[in-house]
Length: 91
Image 1 (cartoon, one colour):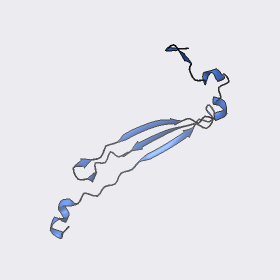
Image 2 (cartoon, rainbow, N blue to C red):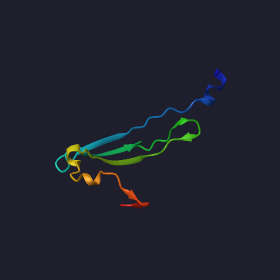
Image 3 (spheres, rainbow, N blue to C red):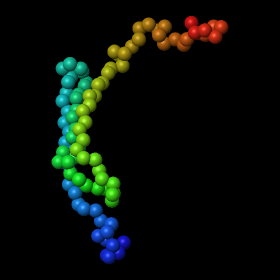
Image 4 (spheres, one colour):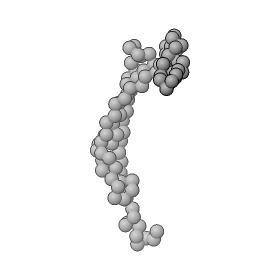
């Protein structure tokens, strides 16, 4: 670029802030957590690419669940067997 068109292609400077936090719920569900997140908490208007505005304030809530494989064992092996087909009928 040259000095005469530098202002044409430049974007305004901006500041924005995100915040997130989590809360362990291990007391009720071992290895689990609830988390909350707010993006652009001050609802700033800014652009990363000219003429493409970014989203305003956004809220997110989630839960992380961890399971141990030993708790998910299936005792009845018949549930894991392949289905048998005879005379075009599923048995």
